[in-house]
Image (cartoon, rainbow, N blue to C red):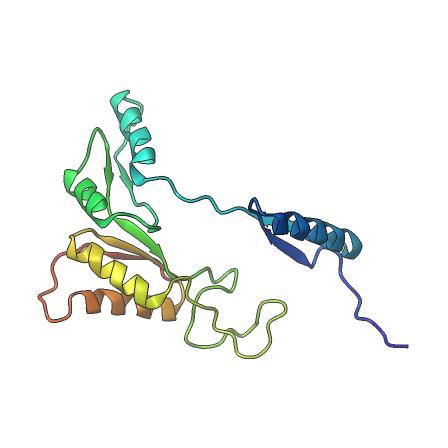
Length: 196
């Protein structure tokens, strides 16, 4: 008789990507049965396409018009199919009744606490279920990110770069350096945030 490894309830998570297909219904049913039989849990992921940028910017403008913003607010939308020209115009417009768009944010990696910060040296302790040298990973397509970063910097839009691990920090610095290659580096006000 072969000994099966004992399962620790709650240690298995079944991720189901939710959409309106028949396959999704089957996947949800299967995940529910597996979670029930193993003591695991289910996490549902539903991806909502972002609205056009102005939709949420209008909310901020309305609040400002009504005098409900009592402080200066610098908004930094996360880069996801944002229009360079729109963002460039919004950053040039400056403050409007206490609010402005200050640039655009790129998320290059995760967090050290979750062991998803992208590093050049392997972690001393891997996440559960991971064997061998583990350095995490970038959360962007590197060539596409560099192209997008250059487009925003060329349009004089500051970029805010979420980078925790040293590999992500290297990528952030490389992208800025490559964007200005062969040119005098202007006062671009780009920032690496978190960098732990």
